[in-house]
Image 1 (cartoon, rainbow, N blue to C red):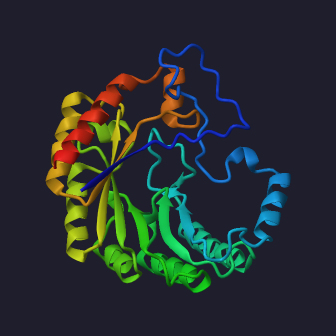
Image 2: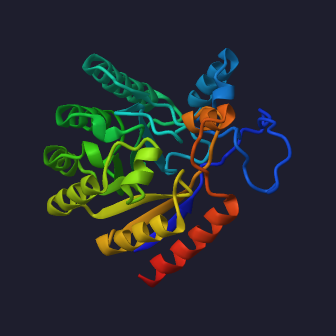
Length: 301
């Protein structure tokens, strides 16, 4: 089992952080911090930025064609938006919107494939993230992956990761993913406590995780990763460590642990500003302590 800590805290130096006043832990990102939730970051989405990007694509890779590429494919759709989510995502999507988006991704891949900066360079890995990529139906998953594979140099890809939310996992989708070449499945567990999950806007229950993992094992993927979050609203030391024991018992190949951060564009941040949040968010000191304990226990396992 491998473990990693991930905190999506890359800031854009061209845009100042939100001023939230004195902060007792100055080395920690305060609520309202500006995160790079998309690349290029939103502050670069200007007419001049588009032209600069086009000029970049028009130039061959300075290091040559042997330099591999990684492809990230964003699926910005969810069943419900989590309270802490700051990524680009939309809930309650129609079938027409899903189809149009898949078509647009395939068309955009063709544009990149023709650009001198990308042309003839092989892909090293492909990562489908979100949002909730597993919200796509099996035919859409197949059409998307086949469309990308036919337009980009895919023959040397070493790893294909697909993010799944427990509630949206079905045996048919898993079969489609496996047949389409997905080698690594990442399941968004976050925590195995139904009350904490509901408080943070997660739509799945612990039993959904268990059912999804059973089907994932039956289908068979090279690597199964479980995502956890430290410091969710309503989390206690007891609930976190109970979840950790259950995760270890599930014996995933890897575990990714995020620490909860609260950027300005999240429902959770708005609740804090309005004073309507009824349950405290664990402090950074508490999150650090639990993270250290989690790493020690995962390493022993």
